[in-house]
Length: 209
Image (cartoon, rainbow, N blue to C red):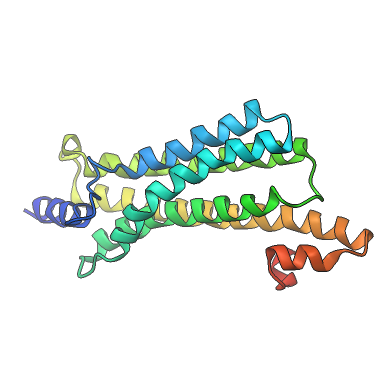
């Protein structure tokens, strides 16, 4: 009975009226994988700055398609504790893509990075996004009816583990982003052009160290 109630809560959470935010219709794993694939295209086919900017438009396209899903999921309330944790875990995938897309878009206009360095940075994001997607797929397995043989305790353990892993990856993406920005800031200081970098990324310099 507990399992049935829990699955019903998940079903309610992942089926958002009018927003097409069902896991079956709009799979957060598919959204994440779309970002990953588009980023891999940057890594493998970008040889010039203009070329990279054009390729990044595809990343932005997939990202914008996913905003409706995540915005709708944020609006779901009155969930039981464990379903709430599932919701928060999925939303962290949205946070991770937010950090990547918004930060990398600025990096593409930063003349302190070479095209080769931007490709390497994009590759680093791809690795972190892949790891996050692996956690998401593990979590998705809990929602799948084929896992009904799991006990409530086992199910909760997987949810807790997925949540904690996603917290870690979100922190890593923030750290990776800030470290790359710190490289730009150091180079800008050598050219007495720090203000341009601060204007581009924000004036809170402490977050880049």
